[in-house]
Image: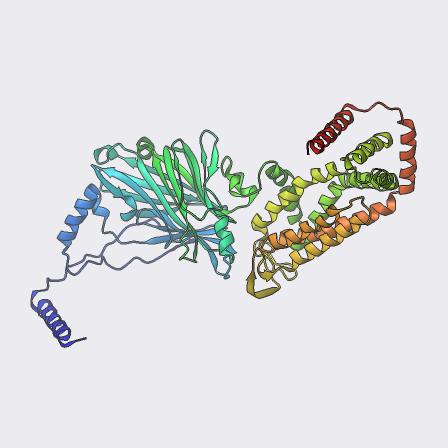
Length: 605
């Protein structure tokens, strides 16, 4: 600092001292505010409000009142009230309300923790805010900036908290009903004599919400969070879940519900009738590692509904299928269960079995193990059919080898003769594949169920501390592309067991050539793909591989291949002059046509 700067600083301090000594205004006299409120239930905790209204030292009360009148008009009387908060709890959550706007500012789920072990804050007062904006003679007045008068009372075992804004001529009343259990909060807003102060235009309901980080894997959380919505005409849709870019959508029709969905939890509002229309957005602030995604909704409430009574419900809870399906139509879509037929498999097979086993077992590793056994038993008839088909193919291997040697180098002729042999002995070459294909929906449905099951969240088993995310037994000092910076032991065991099962099968199948080598590529690919997936999923696949391997050994002991070969030979004699089926004839004609085309192509060359 040079001499001129120092001199200027001394002069400024001198002028300020003179001003506050001789010219400062007298401090305003503040009157103690008292309110008559109904007794609060024992389960309610209320924060103490500030002792007095704080005023800026350089602005007089009259000047502030004038500014409030300019900004809020007839609502100016509520612009300088103290803020007080009321916290109400039920069996599942603590909900904190503010009289500023009469709104929910914080929701904490009792039975869940975040990845650091702290209480799980689903709605954070520093990151989430709702606004009700009305049109007051051309002014856009945000009711969340005004002080409502709170009243709390019990109606049976339900707690009701009301917020009233009134000057004696008009009033706006917001009510919340909190049941003793559950994740829903009923909400209503209604007005009286509003026509005298409000233009009859739609009311803006806005909710800006940054999802609090609850899971260790931030990237996975961002890939599994988005805005979802359901319209009154039955259409369900959502913004791109895996997108980290700015996404938005205009909802130009009646909107029944809008949700802010994250991987295991959802915050949503469900209208009793419908919002008139809306606009939703989502984006990611990569600089903020405490938030997953920034989501928002801007909904319109018809003026007549607002004036006469608009009813809705909030949902603040986990993505548990049995709970979600009871909230609203299609609300279970907030739980990712796959695409196509996969949700049906999860809804009507996997989830019922899972929840049934929860009644008897508290260890989720044991539950997964039992699910493996149940699924393998259900699929046993298909597995048996597949093994019988492979046994028939093995029994015919000497004849198939003869055909291959006879037409060495001419694959088409060899295939034609093989098809003829299959027809004579009564083998359908694709019958072994069909049972395997029928099992695929179950296999893929589990691919969605385990990573998204909130029941597995933070449940440990063996070395896995959380079955809803990957297990790590070794942290690498570097990152391997497409693999990660950790080693998942369950994924490694799953890969090794798959390779073992593949090798065992290759010893008894007729697969030859490059396909025999390529079948080992799939397990290696899954080693990379599943290394960062839920350990519950890779544990299931590992145990399933071992059970399947045991089934294979058992079936091989039961199946008498010599007896099968003799039966096939009898079929060959019976069907020697049997007319070909239409399918076999078409297949043979196609092969001949292809053979002729190949010959013509060679001639042209």
